[in-house]
Image 1 (cartoon, rainbow, N blue to C red):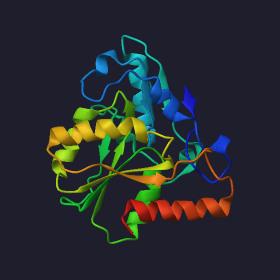
Image 2 (image 1 turned 45 degrees about the horizontal axis):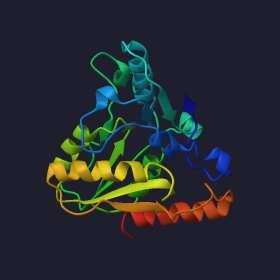
Image 3 (image 1 turned 60 degrees about the vertical axis):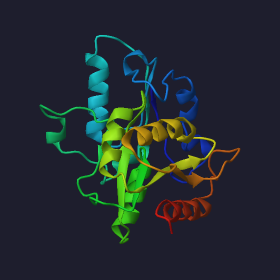
Image 4 (image 1 turned 30 degrees about the vertical axis):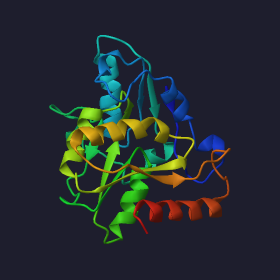
Length: 226
């Protein structure tokens, strides 16, 4: 299933595929390496190469499990969301967790995010002097705890933050929180993972462009600790 999911300032029906409801259907558990028996796959790929590998992997596997792809239509025409052909060549594959080569070696803060929100944060970071690393979680179910643990071991002195566009009672937050905390525990990282996103809300999005821009600015400031 290809379900558009990403906040662009339009109405609720253009913003959310209710990804939290699909994650509630997953039998993934926070503390077990159980990828082989997970009943469905939920992914939020952020590049064309990632989408290519995700669909290719789905077809080449010798078993079939439901694949839910939550990715906004806006990324189809976003110049930043581009991939070189070499990223789809021999020796390449889907990456459940994407760490940036440009990330600082010893960041003060590590921001974990998923999907389109990465580009909002990345653009904002380019105009700031914050000592921050950005890491994308591209596959939510099964949660890539081992891949994330390897990343957390690199940045084990950083403050850990989960940033999302969705309200706190929606989106991946309630699903990823115990899984991130388990990966932190295994990586020897102290402290909780902090939430930076919209407050809990009964509706999905405000549907008013000016309000949406204000919210985005507030979300970015909160993610970077401003």
